[in-house]
Length: 151
Image 1: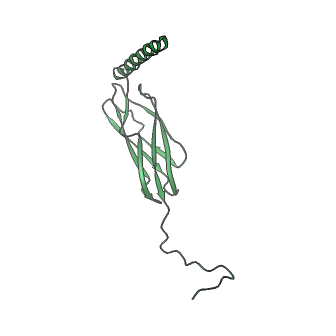
Image 2: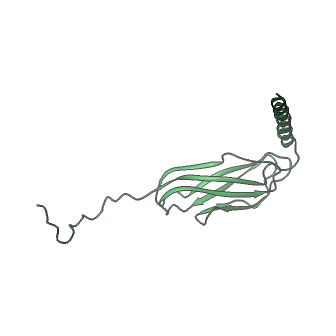
């Protein structure tokens, strides 16, 4: 019985702590980053298809938001962004280019480093699949050497 009461007391204290932290972020001074989406889904795209996607980054804080760096998880994922501070209430667009010459599944990320008080590091993801080109003009198969030719 003591364990149950102790557990309930611990759960109650933890819930108040989480609630206090949530309210603290909402009332913090400084830049606050918000992104329109955490994941961009290319869906299925053709090889050499449109390589760009966009993320809208908004500063919901009361001081300028500075995006100091953005780095793709590999060389095939390249972010582009304005180096100008994002003023309070304003937005900017981060373009991400994926190398659509690579056939197969897409599951990459971009790590964004900022001076935001709510999330100094924000990870954005891209996903989808680059399809292999269809072979409508494929050469006819020739029979293996020594195989009988059907007529």
